[in-house]
Length: 230
Image (cartoon, rainbow, N blue to C red; front, side, top):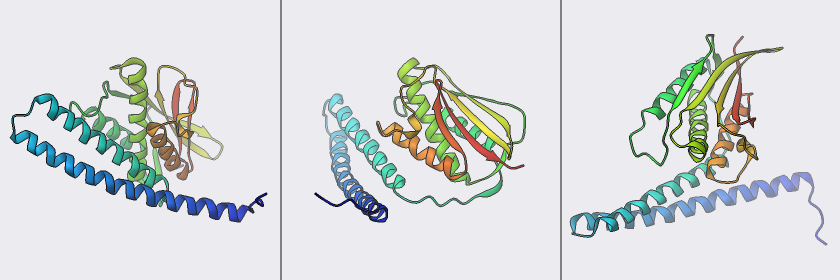
């Protein structure tokens, strides 16, 4: 029988596995880049010839699929890297979520298969905190996109409501962001690896938690809590 590993040995084994996984993902991305290069060359040949339109459409779908797979692999690499927060005092949480919603609402037509829009309802108040603006904006964008994908699967085209409010606690105030998803779900999307969307949400939750906040899925909504400046 193989002896049990000590806690430190177990941690070392997990770290080694993580490093190996990141290297494998890098190698896979290189292979995908090679496939995309050939597919792009083939598309240019098709565009110059009189090939049927459906054949060119097939090539475009292939390239789009390669891009999505490469993006998912990049996300896995990012998940395996340590977070380095660059906090900026006085960062406005409301401004970040408004910009995220505006950018997603103004996305070019035909981007992905998402329909619908985001509607933000913010209670009056101050939402300043010590956040990393870049990482936090990326996390809130990932959550918003994830909710839009969930909503599209349940009620395509319907707007997604985002609520922002302040919540007093013993140690100060929290900013609470809530995305309504119309219905309940059988697992917490923030702490699941059921698919690429869940992995992206898990990465976003990791960023939120690194800021001292929390991210949970409950009662048909995704909720993020972040500590605000007193």
